[in-house]
Length: 470
Image (spheres, rainbow, N blue to C red):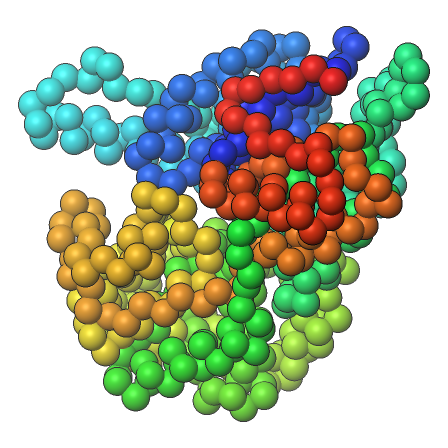
């Protein structure tokens, strides 16, 4: 058996692992690199993947986030024709996320053309879009749904069981069993694990009891999240400060997962009379669709969320949520000078309508920006978290006078304690453990925590492009 790490090794994004066993070759995830200009260059370098995509038999997809799924259309464009196995909820999200990603690629390419023309340069050397909307739409035909909790034969010698990872709707950890000569070998891929006792989704399912090989994420492997009570207190403080100052509360949020969590918390705070009735604008077509998809999978939501949905429907005057669809209505929000709570994508402030709302509200000291998610190095969101007093949006300087709040307890990723607790589900240490999906310091610190806390010795940090034979 051979395993190659083509992404999310020594960094958080670009998840893509190639497994070769006998005459079977498959991928676990096929994600895009994200996080500023450097990520785009990595995506360009990954255009041909470094392996023959036509020889890949199938793909196992842990969840729909673009850093795990975003290069599937490129894979299909280069000749991959096998199935992509994912949960039905992930497929529902991918039907929206992948075409939208293709649209972003096309627009970025068009912008590059216009920019070079303004500079009087030709178009030679311009990079074509990673893929188009049409190519993304075509790749959707490869998606095959699998249920949670039931082993599925994906090849004569390979079966997989998807278990709820509690990260976003449809997310899964994978237990892959490879049979053939000798005893079966068990590979476990944690995927992105959610934080226990958080709103909207159930806690992650327990880890399998054994594994020969384990790949474990480490996004927050070097830190602990604040408690939910502290998180709620911070949100209330940000809301009250903004209301007293007469400004707007701007919340950058990932369209899938974070927007729905934020809506839950705001509605629940109103229900418990911690904050006064409010008007929320969700200004992201993607988030609007993702929220609708989330509501359609009521069976995957935790009991508290189902109860809160019922309460909101019974008390529409307490919380008004407007899902902004068209661009003109989005522009009208910029005329609102106070009292608005605007939730908009993208979560790292790199694209989408949030950039317009930041351009309008960052210079205003009476406004507040509430950062409630991971901000990759190089992103606008990260610069705001790091205390920048001047940022550039659409090429123009924008002073940062608004108050920046960072809420640490809303991450969709488990913190170090939760990751270690999940690992305690194994009856014995896996034969080999590989710490992935984390920035170098986070991964290294978490690997050491595994050795210290659990006593596991075979714990390694793979680097991008590395392969090993087992």
